[in-house]
Length: 384
Image (tube, rainbow, N blue to C red):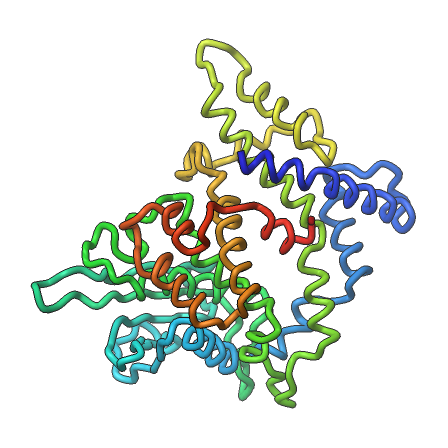
């Protein structure tokens, strides 16, 4: 399976990363035997030593006005759409904004709302959802889709604009990717229009695809400038940001593969007539993927709500599968140019317009000319 391919490609690199961390912890913190509970602290210290960069270093270069304008420019360059503010919209809070999307013929095709700032009594996190779905009303008209994006970024302070971290920008692009799939759909049947009816293992493809643009220099020029000097993001910061991006990526990959393989094997092999099956299955998976020693008393599975109460039963693999498809899809943009019109229109006509009306694998083959491969994800993660 693709999970085993990722294990085979990542395990040696993950062990190398862990050995480097052990050496660093011993030399700088006098930790002779690095344990699981030391990992987060030691890793952060090593990351700071190697790259000397923090999200706060990047925040001045991502003022809200530039990020939103750049995001809309990226969408225009890719999908030939224009995004305009709606000044008379009925809003639930003064922080919220409404925008309309028009196609190349200046025809209205959708609306979306954004509510970006944290505030008291607001649900935490970031998410996208639909207010209204595209559907056929009669033979001559259809209902216009409406989406909304909610985040919890820092609000403006005094006369300064809101300043986002690079992680905030990535989050916004991610949620906007979901929104594009809903707003650009051409399917008129509500159950499979936009984000509706998209199979579980493909719902993150459009969102993770859009994340790539916050790492590319050509698109970063559109979304970044120092809010005071108006200077672009310096090459030194860009380079350090890129190097830090893949810090311990192989170890992180192996952790997620452990979760995915455990989920798969549990749902394939669990025998209710036998005792102690859950721990035995997890132990077997760890024999295949273990990089970091696991304490004997560890029972993480007891709180692994994703696969027991969160809707991901036998489906946790979907996180990685969506990454595989998104990175493999974006690799074609790297080959042809990230704003290549032919490539972007092909992506739009498949993943963004078809909703849940066609199988994602068929859409991928239509776009890429072949089935997904793990190579692009491994390269982008710095593993290969």
